[in-house]
Image (cartoon, rainbow, N blue to C red; front, side, top):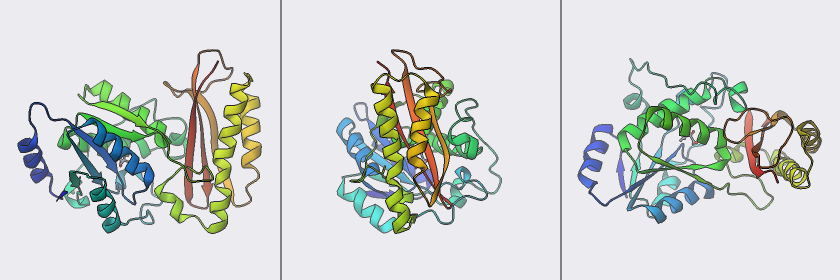
Length: 284
Ligand code: PAF
């Protein structure tokens, strides 16, 4: 695995590497890797000649009172994991080089960024778009691999690439879960033992929501109420949102109709640690 920290060197190495029949799969991450990330690397390996991962805890996507400083970091372990999966390149930019003092550009996808996580984290998605566009411009991958846990991020980035005509396919990979159903996340290590026990309620609430939709309930008010009742069993956490939205536009849905593709999504706080999870459902 070739580790590169300098943007100019990355460009030069990849230009030399690229050939007519070679394809490059890209897995951007913020590190502290878990099975969810590794499943993206495996998906990228299957479809491409080579795989590049990046690890960069992007300050632009954290709000002023969010957990940038506390965000878990474990670089040596990450490198071992990536090497074991056969990752070909690892890009590790430094903050100073990536965002020099006079950096002033911000990329926003206006409407898709407003709802769901955008309500509590109003600057988050412009931070994500800015860093990912900069990474894409450097890496120029053929395919970008994203996890379904961050479904809104997947839609926002997909829209950005469509709007700006970025020539890259996007692959959405399934959520990888712990045994009790909790979606794997780098932030899970920040939970106390009791919070960790309660965190399984997110998956349970979404399971109930999915069950109600499958059994034919069409009122979203009723569906959300039932899901929130499960989450109210938590004594340590607090609900940010539980929403049912159209899976493409992310706009709220009131009454379900046959054929609708919907996303049921939840965000839940345990003190400052915010967990998200979701399920995609086709209404029959
Ligand atoms: O999903 C993440 O880990 C981050 O938002 C990403 C895509 C690496 C951008 O910093």
